[in-house]
Amino acid sequence: MKWFLGCVRLYFRFAVIFLPAAFLISCSEGSSLSEKAFIVPEKIRLKSSTAQAARVVGELKSGDQVMVTDRENDEDGDNWSKVKGPNGESGWVESRYLVKQEIVEKSRKIADEIKDIPTQAIGRSKATLKLRLAPDRSDDDNVATLLPLGTALEIVARERKPRPATTDNKGDNKGETKEDSDNNVKYDNWYEVRLKDYAVLPAGWIYGGSVELEVPPEIVYFVSTGRRITGWQKIGTVTGEDSKSGDHFLVMERKNFGGDEGVDFDRVKVLAYDPQSRDYSTPFREDIAGRFPVTMKMNGTRGHFQLIAVDKNGQEQKLTYTVEMLEGGKVKVTKPSKNNTAK
Image 1 (cartoon, one colour):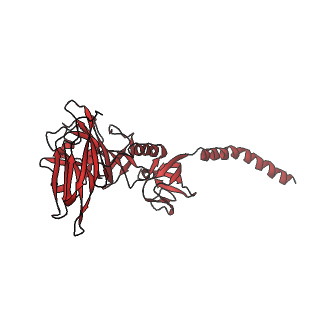
Image 2 (image 1 turned 90 degrees about the horizontal axis):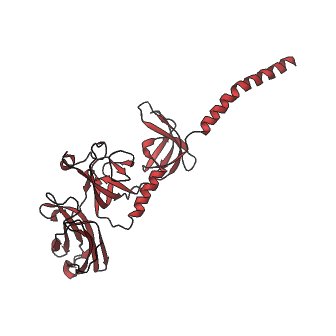
Image 3 (image 1 turned 60 degrees about the horizontal axis):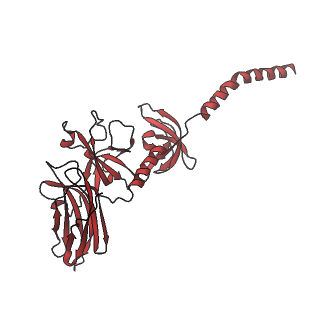
């Protein structure tokens, strides 16, 4: 009996000694990270640890909301996050594949603001580049995520901003042109874009020097001499007697050299498809400086397009042109009257 009581006393002595330590461990686990984030890639595997030989313990997909409970660096210095998935799955993923909830909300707000603006052009990234929440690359505080080479971009607007004195060349301008890399260039061109393939981050800003426009192949060779195509809108489709069809386009262009970089285009023209010759003609062309967006609205064979014209003093005016698709692949454009109101 004495021996039993001695064991009981000894047990409580050890309990008193180790209980605070156990309590601290429990508190430590309870005070771990609890941050909401979203999975960016189409699919990603959960690992049992950050080690290279770690086993796969689950899989998550783009758009899945997770809870980040811990972070640590692996032996190569890469940052990893321990996450808990929507169905209770738990494991480690590289932190670069996650995006915080607040960033997702900001990107979705941008998408909501531009939802009614028609696409002005289609572009594709020439390099790995940064999707930003504002047209500014003076630092990386506004970076939402890294987009891979070849990402498709729906361009809705363009802005010209003063170039920062020092820029981070890792991501924003790997694909820059010679003109972009010229130290004498004092401004950056930016595109506001929609990302069709990125449901998590649907919109943001991209440095223009890393984007190549994908002009429709049927009209790419009809660019005016000394100019480049900066935007286009589809007017409508015409079908010939042989059932072959083609599209009419409204095209915006800008001078390659000596033009006003403060505008998005300095010429608009119509490329009309002839179903008999299967070739394009230019029934309308006007040299006019303007800014995006250009909006095209057709109701059957009749409609109109609007553009924002900019005069030499920087004053803007919204102009409306009527459009009519005629037989034989012809297109008629009527210029606006003088009673257009200033924007």
